[in-house]
Image (cartoon, rainbow, N blue to C red):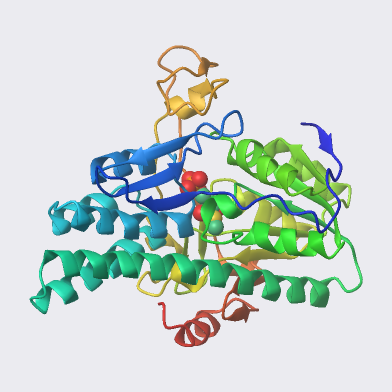
Length: 377
Ligand code: MRU
């Protein structure tokens, strides 16, 4: 995919992706996921009948992206309670599956709290399980609403920063419908301006090592008819130097109280480039991604993943998780450094867009004020 011009006319929408759904076949409730490790080659569903299966899906990135991890974690607790598993144990396993995206723990704790509250009223296991499922569904719906609001706020911000322009936006990792109850975070903003005929081009970083940009964002851009081009992460610098980027739009996995943003590794270098080239660097995330308990960026735990993800390239039928079927591109046993995320300090961020509004300049006080408006933090 070198260079892709718009495939479908604006206003011709593809069917919504079924990324995650609760189902109740006769054998018992299940959580059905679109297996993101198989995209874009195949749209294959992964059926989780228990929490260990869901934990595996989270660790292997079959289900991924901060908001969706929160939703999946919430449904995981509902699954445990509906199937009579130990809810406290299930919550612990789910919360520990990946450390950086704060939404995972948020979704798990929120649904577990609904379960315990109902259980505490002595209404029985079935009522407690129903309360857990209702809470997971509420979280799912709220995230879809947040997605719509973020897209609206993001669009207004772009018009304020770059009046009257058709934008060339650069994005990293994947932040669309594949990570959300709705149309996503940063990608939802790009999609909204595309629908208004204001997107000149979406520059899509491939996002090594697991290629969420190449495999997933390019897939979402193509199915929505966006004009996009895929680039290697290393090509971003020359793109800025050529004056081809009007703004950077990314998501977040955890935003600390001081406004530091953890996101997919490679986000921080983009922020440095954007600062040097005087290009707005915009983070789009729901308030559920803000963690006021984490004081600053140095306190954010960054997930370290297997070196095999670096020493192997993706296999033709999905992503290698470091030991499974990828093409080996380094000497046998080569040590590798593989942080899944990096942290961008607030002074490099032009604005944080949430469903409650925009924080700009990015300060701890501004962020706390905005979060106080949200019932979700
Ligand atoms: O490792 P992943 O694929 O789960 O990382 C996802 C990201 O870094 C996204 O950019 C982030 O979760 C924001 S998505 C709204």
